[in-house]
Image (cartoon, rainbow, N blue to C red; front, side, top):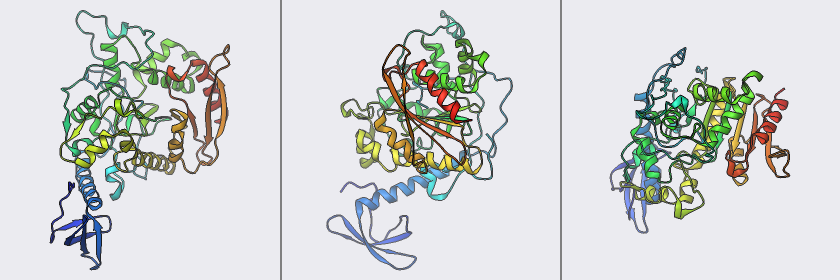
Length: 425
């Protein structure tokens, strides 16, 4: 039997109930144990207990790492903002001061309570133009309306250890936890080869924390591509943000680009960019193109199989969607207690995925469906669903994915903004 933990009679192990001693290994993969605290004798399935014990051990290691990396306070943001060159990973995501209530712990640390948020690092900077190329600031957006995949920033690995991958789970996304606007996607698409994602995120220190500054991507897009925004999701998210927060005189493309460069996705900025899956995961419904189908976890046969299977990954209680949904829900409820709730939350993805967004806000029982046109001269309409948290005034809007493939247009987004502004009065 291939187990995460090989149980030995006479040895002691711990599950959620407490520490027990293995008395006897039984046929059919079972075992008899005795709890030390109350002498209760029980029979367990070895495979199930192996995963539980292994996960607890992993949680403890992650808690130790988080405690070692934790910093006591967030420094005040620098003013004016400056930039220095910074290498960054290959593709973009989707994705304030602490009050009396701590932020919820990361998935791996949730059993032991909340942890303090790490201090905000300084904002990385726009890299200088490469020799023989135009400066980044002089670049112009092209008509490209699909994510631009950058070359890997680190050597690509094909095999990993379980702990390396699980250390990435506490990462929430890009931007500010205390932001006025949240953007929650169904999945950060990432590169077509998931080994690139894992190699970069394991190697780059930004992903060992809860949050990163989106500048780590934006700088590379400006330096290495002809597409200013890098991916349409961020362009549309930036459009919604500036339409909601910026004054009338700043509603120009030039002003929007300036906001995107200096504020969008900043650690002290106005937005949080996150997803309901912890690892970038395109082709969720296509196993043949699943990004982690060729990834190997050398020390964990169980999680090796989970990560290679698109459906099992999404449904896995620890590695997939359930823990992330719970964490986002806990984060929102914590902000409510701190009276720092976001003003607007945009949950975007195909309608079949909206049920997962609703799990983040289980107290909202009624959403209002609205059909909005995508252009004044077209009959095509897209559906959105909106609800309001009466205790905070936060507006939650479920909408299609932020991409041209979903027929998103600025005309449509203008109507979305109109709904949010009218309901927030």
